[in-house]
Amino acid sequence: MGIGIDLGGTAIKGGIVDHLGVIQEERMVETQSQLGYGQVLNDLVLLIKELHRLAPTEKTVGVGIPGILSADGTTVVSCPNLFWKNKPLKQDLERALSLEVLLVNDATAACIAEAAFGSTRGRSSSVMLTLGTGVGGGVIINDQVISGAHGVASEVGHMIMEANFYDCGCGKNGCLETFASATALIRYCRKQLAEGAESDLKAAENFDARRIFEAAKAGDSLALAAVNRLARYLGWAIANISDLIDPEIFAIGGGVSSAGEFLLERIKTETKSHLTYPDYAMPEIVLATFRNESGMIGAANLCHFI
Image 1 (cartoon, rainbow, N blue to C red):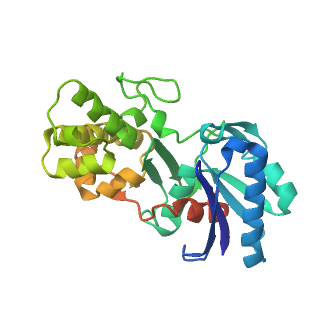
Image 2: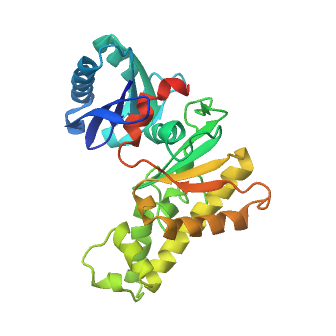
């Protein structure tokens, strides 16, 4: 058993996870980030205490954070969704709980969930890519999470691909997540429509990534071009990562992954066409097993990967 917390911008989700990766108990509260660090900390403490009462023998809790941690895993250096900078979260939680607290980036937590119980289980070297509002990433090499000298490794969403028509939220131009996220997909379609492109999407007052994929599957030319563009840049990124660290397998998760094989086959084609050794070192590329629960499952199993 383990206790895992997924701290998100809108909700704090916590679960008790068994040895098979199944969530036995789950609790959720709203993330009141507008009320400041102290309020979120208090809500975290109360949620963890409630879960610990249900699993009193547990001595450790893992917490997934949507931001960057210090190299020693004690401080939230930057967490834009919560408006946090340099918050000593590990120390504050341990003082309030009398439990050991392990912090991890949320995309890395998802990577751990897949490695422990999901689509990359049994592989010692894997990469997780989460495609949602942005692009997150987690890397495991020889069964160890890679966090880097400064704690900022695996920020694959901010790899520079080439110049793009809008800047990333991080302030740079050309980041992967401005090409290969749900946000990127929508912004590209809106730009093309504004410039006169013909598409069934024009009739929609508003549309999301799911609607774009539906239109692409139906043969809509703009939607199909947008999906192919996303797959092209993601394939380039996977090829670059593969040439650098040569993992066995990539898992694709996040909301965009619900497009399934329609997207996955395009990503595989683009990856193979840009690998240096495509016939020898082509990684397996699969859909992630877990969806919204991956953060809790991965955080609960963090102690086995650090």
